[in-house]
Length: 85
Length: 307
Image (cartoon, rainbow over the protein chains, first blue to last red):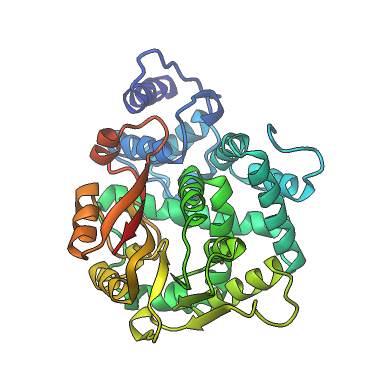
């Protein structure tokens, strides 16, 4: 899957989780840019991404992720069949 | 950093250390510290300085706090996938947590910090303080005093003749003992009217009835909360001030009893024969009660009861 397509799908998840149609994320978007993005909504985001892409994040990946780009990196790796350490 | 004046060096070291390691916590800390009043900022500084004097630097405290947040998040992820707490028996968590000295020490210190750094714990502690200052009588009992902040707040008002803490963890008792000694400038022993006992609450017996019983962060840690409330009821004087907290859908490694809604919590209280005098409910930011319940997001409740 193209990275741009991935970003679009992830953007749809953000819109749903934060209930905000105006959200438009980029690879640089982080929790600092979205007011309601806290540890609780982070878990919801991760859960929805896992369901949508059929992948599983490790705890380290969930905790260490600093922005959307790093989220896409993990999705990309998993879709390519790279297993988490 | 709003509300955190320049000379609060221990707090600054802790906050910088936490913020360097975790983006979500960096954001949370910035938000929560801005919500502390001046008195709380001073207390947080004092708390971090106290642990530093115990040989735990602010950077080590930050590590403990982050480790605790990590465990919490791991349990939240488990809960979001299973709708269950990972463990449901005391035996399962006893060795993992309560008898694990290293984990308990980290847990108690991190938990004390969350009284200032987590909205839920700060609001519950504020509610407690607004109520405990009016409680008076002869005998005060706290079940599970843990880090010692709740019992020391009661001791500070000197509204009771004797203060007793009962905790199942020897590490907690030691953390609490040292905190009380430091807080009230005692060199070798606890303040003379304070007593700490390491035992299961069910084995605790007293010839005295208690005018105040505090059970904060306790009922979710036991298999049969109704039996704890019954025991508390039997130990309470008529008209006693009883303070309890109960979290709903709030996973932690050692939370074994899952409360799922407020109705369930209040039925438990009513069935124990206590009467509800006052309560507070702390919701996640930007959520109504209905939304929090439907999303199974953590809700924290605290009740003042009487007999």
